Length: 213
Image 1 (cartoon, rainbow, N blue to C red):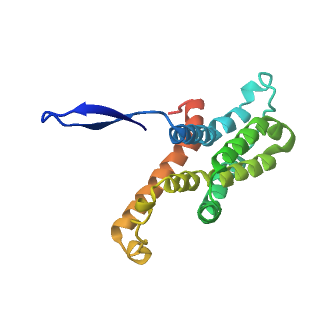
Image 2: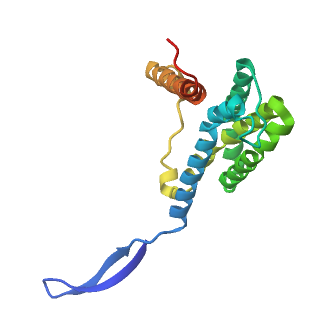
Image 3: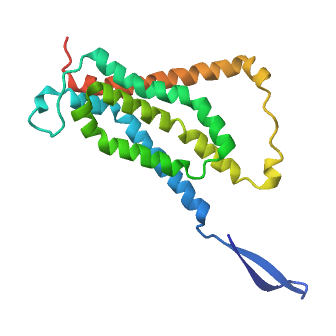
């Protein structure tokens, strides 16, 4: 915000100054847009796992792509899918602790670079490494994306004014963990994530395979 002082004459004849604020796009606005764009890109990387697996195992495209077509069974495909979520789940808490101590200034850019590099290398990984290399890559992608939400939150916390930071109260974890509404919200959140995984994994196959009576 830019502030402009304007001389003003009041009804009683006295004179004074009126503050006029002008909106101006600042660094934090650009950072917010950058964080939103990064979240969208990483979400697209996460959401394309099912489509990627479908394309890799599509026998009708053997001569239609430079990516080698495989015939992985459903167990192998499920292992590949679960590698991402396993890496994401085990790193959520450590990511929060690490970023709380060391900060997250360059973390969003690092996550974008890591995921972009692995996504660009995925065709070669599939061609030369097989399903084991794909599992390891998905595991690394899951670990890296676990840092996104804590990095965004910590950066937003750091932007709070000093007087607002002092108003934050300690979290009563015992009372929270003993609260039935908390567990209801936790179960609802887990169910919504399960539905998301279902759409992520099974919908591409549902759309590809003909519906049999």
